[in-house]
Structure formats: C-alpha cells, structure tokens
Length: 301
Image (tube, rainbow, N blue to C red; front, side):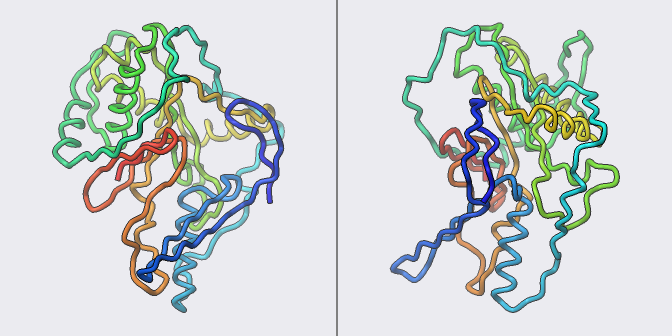
C-alpha cells in the first residue's frame, strides 16, 4: 500500500492506495479476461508490460529475458535542490471562457484511423508555417504520435468553442529512460515518464495550420533532457506539486508497449488496451489506429 499525494484538484487526501490490483474474469466459453491496475508510484506502462510478460514466461517455465533493475535512488532529487527551468505543466491556466461544458453529457465514440488517413495527417503536419516570431518553419520529420496528438488537440479546441484568448494546454507523456545522462539501466522497474507541456491560445489552435500545432508538440518533447529532468525532480521535491488539469488535454503512446505478446501458455491475447484513464493513447494494433473514449480517454490502436 502507498499513500496518495493528492488529486488533480490539488487536494491532499493521503488515502491509502493499493500498489497493484489484479482481476480475472472467467467466461463460459473457457476464455478469460485479465485486468491489471498499477499505482504510478510503482510502475509506468513499460514496467507494467515487463511485469506481466515476465509473469507469463514464469507461468510457462521460461527464464526471464530481462531481470528487473530495482534501484530507485537513480531518480532522487539533488542536494542542494536546484530548480533551473520553468515547469509549465504545473501552471494553473486562467479561466476566461464562458463556454463551460461541465454540465453537459459527454458522449464517447470508437473511431478508426487507417493508414491513408494517418499519411494525410502527417503530410499536413509538415507543411510550411509561420512560428510565433514570424519565421517560416517546416517540420522536416514528424512521427505518427506527434501528428495525431496535434490533430486531436486542435480538433478538441475547435469543438469546445472557448474564448479565443483562452490558454489551452496539451500534456505529452515522454519515456525518459534514454533522456538521462547516463541513460537508465535496461530493465529499470519504476515510474520513468514525464509530462511535458505545450500551451497555446485557443484562437491559434483553431486558426493556425496543423503544422504549427505539431511544432508546439515537438518543441515540448525536445525540451525533455537530463538537465530539465533533474530540475523537474528538484521542483517536485520542493513543491510536491499537483498538475492542474483545467483546459488541458493529455496524450500518451502505447505503440511500443507489448501487451499483445503476453502469453500464459494459451497463446497471445485476442485483444488488449486501456480501460479507464483520463488520457489519450496511441496504441498500435494490426497496422491500424483506433480511437476509443473512456472517462476522457482516447485510445488509438
């Protein structure tokens, strides 16, 4: 058990939470569904995949291909603490919009992105655009994750119809194992992700081309390096900060998480994916991208 440090509203309730919860549902046909929940104090998605796949190998009598590395002291704050960067992911965005949707019923849909759609979005993402300083910029390369994150952030801003001056933010989840110097050891088991933020006025999100929004997302991702990460850890040590989620869209990628290769002896699973998280995921499944919504969760697979 661990104590929660607070919630998205900034309340420090300090409730005891389980570090992990497993649930097996058996079906009459003989199949079963395995549900797994991890506290992010304990593990991130990469560590969760390593755990469940190692569990499957153990069940089949196989040796572990990657023993876990459990030394958490690698991610300790420095002494003395040095906060050397602005960490905008913790900023509270002022509310200047009158169009609030808190009382409206939210409808969830399952949406597919095929390869042609993704190619078109990526082509649009690399069109020339004028940056905040008036310089003409071209994104020479763009990942599917960056393009779809920007596409959905832009579409969300248009759908919400906020005041043009309203600041809106996207939080992008970055795996930082190879961002540290030296990089974290292979098999590091723990929470080694960081939220990096891009912020923009609603007017620009709606009116500027998609390539402009992609540039903001890429700039936020490039910001994550060893120096910035060390500053973040020191900031968290001094503030125990909670990320405000007002006017914020959260995006992550599961495209490299091998949940689909889990095997307890009956073969690989028929289907895998997130159940309920307030975040947008990019998950690769059979060469297609699929969007599902669950409590603000948009899953692309």
